[in-house]
Image (cartoon, rainbow, N blue to C red; front, side, top):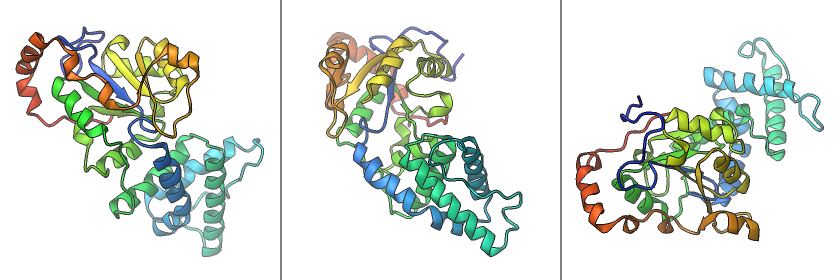
Length: 297
């Protein structure tokens, strides 16, 4: 039994076409340019600063160890930048410490240039972004239609989750320090690649199991066709987000998937039977007045 009282494979709540809305971030809630032109350059620029300022912290030490292990895994790849090894990072003399920092900076640049979506890199980036958000140097950019849609969906009883290749920590930072304020109250949970890769159908089955819903009760919104294909294979209903800067869709893609250019087009409350809408809202009145619970999933 789930915390919300739903059983695995439960039927849709009365009058709602779905129980859950699962959202991608890049190209769906947030411009791709924000990630590409703001977040990634900020992380790249501040790797050395982060390492120097947080060297003694356990968090920083774990970041370095994770990157060292990733470097070892990648040793046979073309152009890989190896990271200096050390069994006692904290006990290093200044020269050795600086050599290690330099090798980490170069390795991170190589990983980012290769667009590697490995946990070690995502973890480090998340920690760097945390400082940027907390210091006010970063603000999560959100499309104008997102907040009204989140308010509308949650008021109607939908549960909204995020699924992104960025870490759960990075997701919460983006929405917690957004240009529209703290939006975390609208989300019931967050998923990253620890649940599985977004282009694998099993990942969406894992999400359905985790939130104890049937895949068919989930609506997934993404801008990536391969992700849509994987979700569809898992039995999840899929809509493709068409935003400025997103990769263009083929005619076949447009025929295969429903597309939207704004969340204003998605699950409007007007789509419900008017006679049943009042009953639905009245029956959920208690829940509507509660602040949505945020849970890390």
